[in-house]
Amino acid sequence: MVPLVLIGRSAAARRLADDMCASAAASCVLVEAEAGLDAVDIAREIHVRSGRAGSFTAVECAGAEPRLVEHELFGESPRRSSDLESVSPRAAVAHARGGTLYVGDLAELSASAQARLARIARDGEAWLVDTDGSCRLNVSLIASTSTDLESEAREGRLRHDLLRHFTRTRIVVPPLRQRADDIPLLVESLSTCLSENAGTPVKALTQPAATLLSAMPWRGNLVELRHAVARLMDVAPGPVIQLEDVLAHVRFDGVLAPPAPGGTLRSARRQFERDYIALVLQHHRWRIDDAARSLGIQRTNLYRKARQLGISMARPMHSS
Image 1 (cartoon, helix red, strand yellow):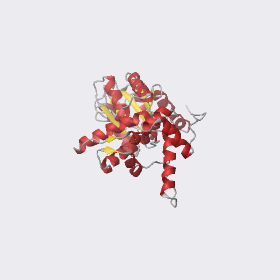
Image 2 (cartoon, rainbow, N blue to C red):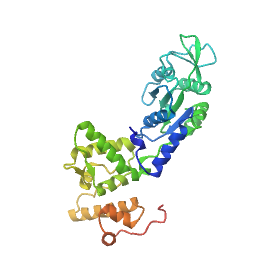
Image 3 (tube, helix red, strand yellow):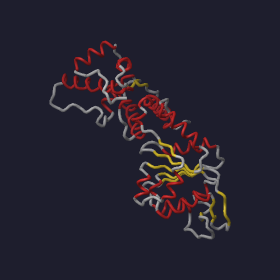
């Protein structure tokens, strides 16, 4: 099954897929992804596309005790019998032989673990503890980060040699705010998956609902979108998710601010219509025909409604 993060037809989604294909043969890959973008799924897909016979092994560093992470990666404390890094036969590095080792949140590694991983990246070999012999690993190393690793290195929290190994091949995962055109497909995929798991019918999305969801910033990316779709599937009363369902149950996080209490229902409705139409126009980069189609009204009606609400139809000079 295609990872959710790869679903879409936007230019950003196509670039991501191309970058993943190009990185399949690399020995070290850095996946730069904001929180909530499923970097481990990107790494797993690169492993699949690489055709490596070995397994995919993942070690997450964020939130874990650094000493335990180092033990998971390398096993026992090093007993150096050569210039090679030593690892236990059942450690993650040894288990990933012939395959892929994924290290989530690279900058969270301890200084000693960074030094050991840098030696693995440099040599491609390790000394196996208790076997008294060296072993060619033939492993692809993939690491992820949600921070600026160059800054981490300048401030002494990341080894420069480790940074050099991983920044030779970089994949930048676009956040959802750069993939507005993909949101309806992502929602459809999530809705189908949730419905299959629950044994319930799939709920479709109306065009106005899809337009509003597409225009939201999704600062939590796929994690936030998953929660929103699960909520909508739960609370939408009919077989279709309507605009009203989105308005009632999805946090807008500053995209559409709720009207201040104290006004009349008519003034609140007028304010919402103004904000919503302006948002749709912005989403479609002031292409009037596309905006009218999304709103389900005629082009002439959109012009009339905009005049009534005081919305400028002129495209801002800075918009692209």
